[in-house]
Image (cartoon, rainbow, N blue to C red):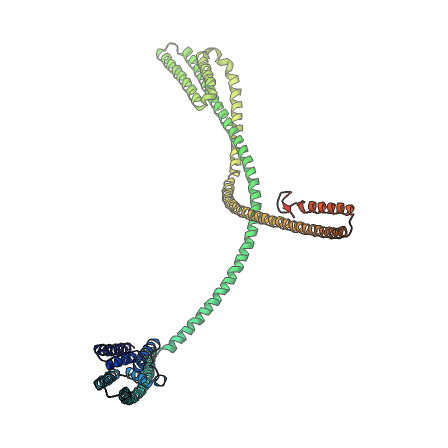
Length: 542
């Protein structure tokens, strides 16, 4: 396409040069009349030269064809000269043929100019000669066109062969690619087969492995069956345990009741034991007090005996001074012994309860020791009776002490009861924790049930409200339809009254009736209606 554009531009330039050359030649010879005529003729020919016009048309049409679809103009659609020019331009030898045409075309004006010098040659011969030369040039161009067409046919055939060869080449390349892909797939298959063969060679013990796997599967199935049996047994055991738990719970409740009874009994026994211990302490205090009194009485009795013996010895051996001094020493020793006995009695008794009593006893002992000479004989009989009574009380206290010890030995199994009670308390605390957890879950479930109930109640209330709303809407629609029918009836009556009024000249009654109907219609139209959805009372108007 670019080559054709270039060739057309070159041909246009040559044609313009040819026109300019003819104008210059015609402008140079303006002296004589023939030259004027010839110049006029040349100018007219230059203006109305069919060859130049046809060449210009051929150039323009060929340019348009090249710019439009890139195809050359057919030879049959233009004159011979134009066809020759277009055929020359549409071939590789176009430039050379145009050059030859350029050499041929200027020859005719030269002949004309040569003939201008000869005044005798008529103008018709000049035209004939020009036509002969142009015909010869056109015939030569036709021959060249035929040659060019033959070459073009050969080129078309070659192009067709080239396209067919290209198609064959593309098909062959496609086939080659398919074969290459098939070859690659075959190579992959061969590699896979080799790998499989190697694997089969390496895995010669596949059957043994398969048998081992089957044996392992059998073992697994057996173990699975055993596990299933164990699971069923465990489930049965769990059921039994649940039943036992129920019985244990019942027993636990009974044990709780017994525990409460035992705690009550234990508390009562503890109270009794504390009372008995208090009594025992009181009796021990009394026993100690009696022991102290007995010791004091025994000391008094021994002191009285010593006094009597010393008095006898003093009467018998008054003369002996060393015996008298010995008797004084014995008396002083007895006095010291009485004082020591008084101190031991005060140590054995309770300080808060018996301080005053011990002090009185010490005073009594000291007074009895000081006045044993005057009162010893009178109190000897009373002291013996007191000793007998005190021995009886001691025996009674010892017997009561033994009975209390026996009762305490009987109460020793209560220690085991306390251990059992402790265990039951621990179990009771654990059960209380479980009960608390269950109560917490129950509370949660109750809360969820309450929320579900609230939702259900809300749904029911909303459903009732919607039903009431639909009912009210239906009632409103019915009321509106009734009022609409009434208004239509009144409008029909109004129309009838208007027609009657138009027919009757004196119709004051009808006018009043029409006015009443109009007022009634206006009141009905502007009467507000309550909205069933909203809370307002005067919201809807028809």
